[in-house]
Image (cartoon, rainbow, N blue to C red; front, side, top):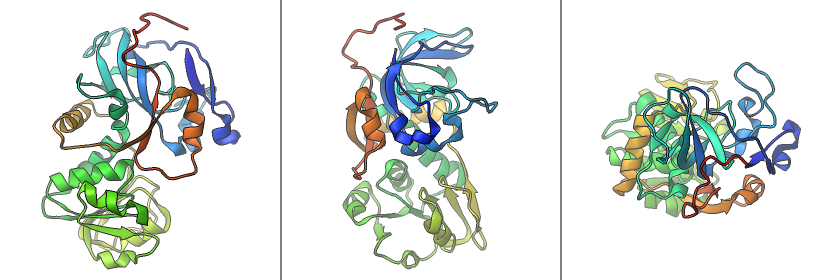
Length: 316
């Protein structure tokens, strides 16, 4: 099968190549998914799990990408809850071959059924961003109606979903980003926008919750804005400073089939809209990773055309 693979950790994005890889094996409780669309995180080439398995052994050549939408074509031994021919979306394991391939093996519990009226390219933009935003705001920070939340990178993948979820629950939302992000952030539902390049972050005042996706100085400055009893949640890096009378939490997103299904339903009813930017073919994946110009929305890789017949059982 065709896939994007990496072999040289020092090569960075220059080491991404379109190549032939073995058809994946469906282990116990796995499914094989024919991938229609895949999402990726630009920084994942720096993650240890991209290069080693859970035991720390080298696993190159490895296939990056951890978000997917596609169709189940094979069930592993003992797999329940999904069926061959079913449309699904979700997350691949961090330490296994990922979604930038024509087929991939995924634990069934990491996938949720995908309704027929949701396009694969939209679904592929939802798993990491949607689950991260939900887990940050509600599982870790316990955001509730009437509270104020500061969302950094509010026009980005995670931030844009977080703004929508926070507004729906009745929170007051302050979004941050660069000047070009102002209109998009306010359109998503934020009441206030802070330009991180031009404005003083301290003007925000005290907030109940901070969601940080940037790290560095922004993370450090944000700890001073958390009011007593409040929470700062970051996915960028473990915080080195704690809010004076609050909490600071670093976490990595976890798969959640039930929550994925809930997010899909919100999307169907217009309550949630992932921001999809460019949709590019598998052959252009290296260029998508290496992009130097900021573009709005997630870049999604279209691996297969849903309207073409599937080659069931094909191992090429």
